[in-house]
Length: 134
Image (cartoon, rainbow, N blue to C red):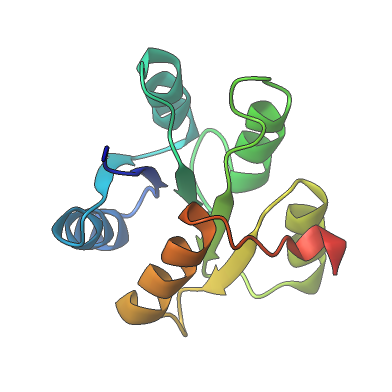
């Protein structure tokens, strides 16, 4: 069975690198991208589609919502589940992210790698609960 592929998009290496390493150590094939533009390039060059995107909101060049808008307009990427992992605890941002199809919204201040792995396992195995439908 082929490993599930995850794209980790975060401009802060202090989050991106340990999460990518943890996912790889737990049976996933994770690739890190330092911003939205780099993530788009990874999506474009990928022969095998990604099974999930882990996305920060606050990034230079293209924030998380701009990235979401872009991928949701592309037929090849529109169905990829997305977890937003961010420092932004703003109700309006959660609503906008939900409207753009974010599947899970997790605050960096409260997340643990164990919780994140459970959320990822649920999404890549098909037990998706889309917050835009709540």
